Amino acid sequence: MPPCATITALCFSQVTRELNRVLPHEGILVPLVALSLADPGHNPCAAIHLDDIAEILIAAVVLVPHDKQVNHWARVSVLPHTDDTINADIEARVRLFPRLRAAAYLHSHPFAHGSTAPSHGTSCDYEGHMLPLLEANRMSGLLTSFSFIACRGPHGRGWRLQCFALNSRAEIVDVGFARVVPDGDPRVLAALTPAIPTRPVARAMLRHAHTELRRRGLTYTTDELFDGWRRTIIRLSRRLAAVVLVPVDYPTEAPRYFVVDRATGRTVTHTPRVSAFALAATLDEIREAHHEPP
Image (cartoon, rainbow, N blue to C red; front, side, top):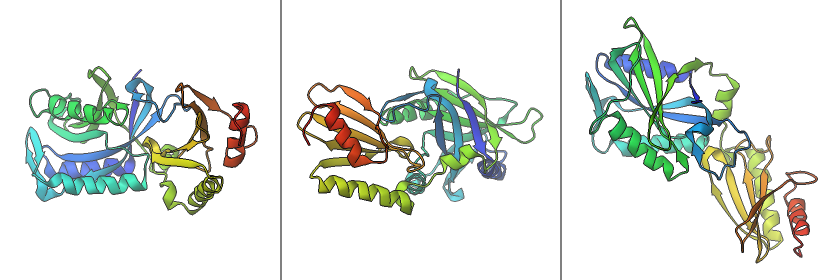
C-alpha cells in the first residue's frame, strides 16, 4: 500500500501563491519533506524503501527567486548558478529541522485539469528529475524519490497537488493527491522539531554523557543520520562496540542501544534494565552481559 501525502496549510498557501504568480506558465518550488514510517521501531541505520513509508509530509518549501526562473507554458527551468543559493537555504533549514529532507521536486502542470502524470523524455519529469534524485537519495539510504505536480482543479479553478514516487525498481507509483493539514497538527510539530544542539536541555544532557565517556577513557565517534538521529559508536574493548542512537526529540524519547561484535560483525539490541538515559550504567550492563571486564 503506498504512503499518503500531506502538506501543511502554510506550505500549500505558499505553493498556490507562487503558482498563481506565474500562471499560465509552469512554476517551480523546492519541497522539504518529513517521512513517517509504518514501523516506529525501524532501525535508523537501515535503508528506507517506499513500502516502509506511511506518510510523506511537505513541511517546508524553498522558493526559487523570481529572476532566476525561466517559465514557459509547458516547461520551467532555472538559470545557471542558481543551485548554490537554493542549496544554502535548504541546508540552513535542514540543519535547524533535521527531520526534513530535500528528497522531492515540485512544479506545476497548469495545462492539466483534474489530474496529471510525470512527463517522459530528456530533461522531463521522469528521466530529468525523478531518476537522478533517486540515485542521489540511494547514497543516503533512501530508496525512493518524489515528484509533486500541481494541476488545476476539475473545472480549471484552484490547484490540486498530486504526488508520485519511485519504488526501488525505479517504477512510478501514484501516491494520490496531497491532503492539507493544519500547521498545529502534531505530525507537523514533530516534523519541525529543532535539532538537538539548538535545545539547551538536550544539548546539556548529551554533553554530560560524552564527558562521562571521556572520564572513563573510552574512545567514540559521533555522526548524524536522517531524521535527526545522532549515532555514537563507543569502543568498549578490542571485541565489543556499543552503538547509541539518540532521536531528535531526545530526551522525550529515549536512546536505543546496540552491541556489535567487532570480530564477527554480529549486532544485537540491548534493552537497559534501569533507564535508557543512564549511559554509564548501560555500558556496565553491556560489559557484564558479554563477560567483558571494565
